[in-house]
Length: 384
Image 1 (tube, rainbow, N blue to C red):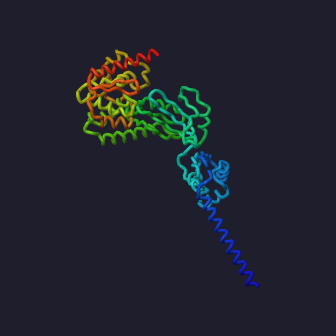
Image 2: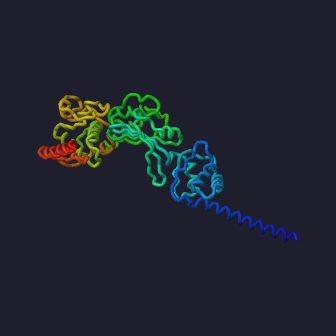
Image 3: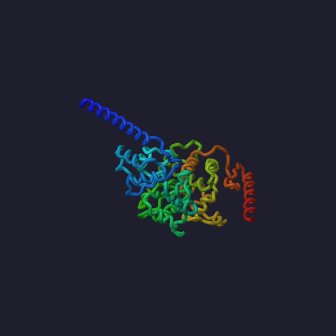
């Protein structure tokens, strides 16, 4: 009898062990295989949250089938204490394992709200944007000019969210004065900007920042990036370049930057200035005259006067020979490369063509015809 009972108990135990093993294998499979989410979502994990709240949120949004199983998997992976606050873009079909890896690895938020301060040539604009998980594209919620416009309520609301990301985007061709004044107007930053960096020495780029960052530290990062670009560009210069030093390269690149907003035109514009420098011709470029008037402090906001074109300033290339003494803006990498690797060709002139680009010419007669066409376009626009 006892032997029979022991044999039956052993059989039951074996069956239970098999069942338990099957449950564990099933749980592992559910934890690691593709989840039920049909389209991407933005999962927000507030500061102070826990895995129980996260699992309930995921269940409500249809990202997981079982909150308890999710929590068991987290404990089994020993990640229960590694939850990081932030906003996470959870892809369609993400497994529980994928989601746990995302929310415990941390780092920069991958979705949610972003406030971008765009420092442009004519103005500074603050944008409040949110990522739409369905399209993976940002949707603009509000925009305003810091220090001038009324601050939108949504900006104040998102400023209060701990997981809001911040970015400063410098446009190519901005001046150092514009950058410094823009940083002063950004209420998320602290500290004094210090001495204005030299013209041309700030890299047009995108900079991730956080509230409380020091203005002088941000400017130092901008200068460090630009110096790296200058060195890289100078090392790759071609024998067609007319500039003889990194300083001259930076000056010429800033002029190219201000002369054209069409990326593919930069090497052509560079070739015109290179040919003129090689022939001892004056550059005769309006942006240098404008810089002589404004010193880079703001936008001229009108056309140049004949008296300004004739006035002798260190930057007036209608008057001086060769390059001006300093850059006239902060050029991007493409303009730096154009300055040391211009197109081959004999162009000596260019003028606007009415499309946003320029018409290039080898001879003065050809150039004058292009100028006449541009005057006609201007007249037609002014009459409309």
